[in-house]
View 1: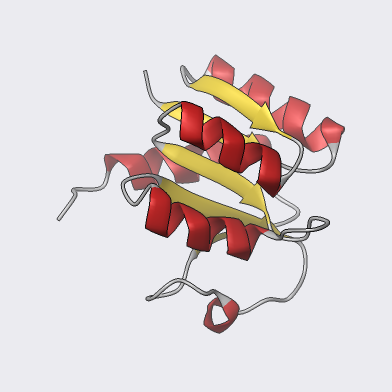
View 2 (view 1 turned 180 degrees about the horizontal axis):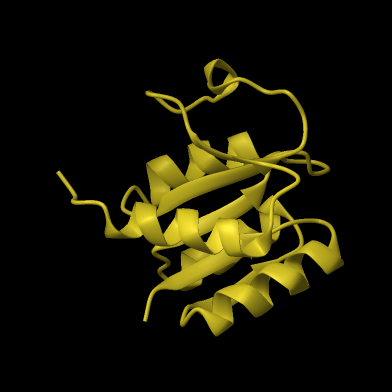
Length: 120
């Protein structure tokens, strides 16, 4: 069972995505901020972290950078409704971006596809 951490400061988004990922067979954890996500990731291993970009105090790009250093085997997928470019991503080679608005099934499908891609 794949493990995912969903990070968003909006409770409705977290709850909706948690519901759909759980229905798809994921073990789901949620965090309301990037700082909370860091604490959870230090205590538990995840296959993927799905994070909003625009959050207070620490944004999704900063979380993805931290994940790349501390938990490099965890896939980071960022969600944003703003017109950001992958050039803004602090990760070498850019980031995986899920543009808002999206249907929850699209998020599940994209994360599943990424996790099923062959690893180098």
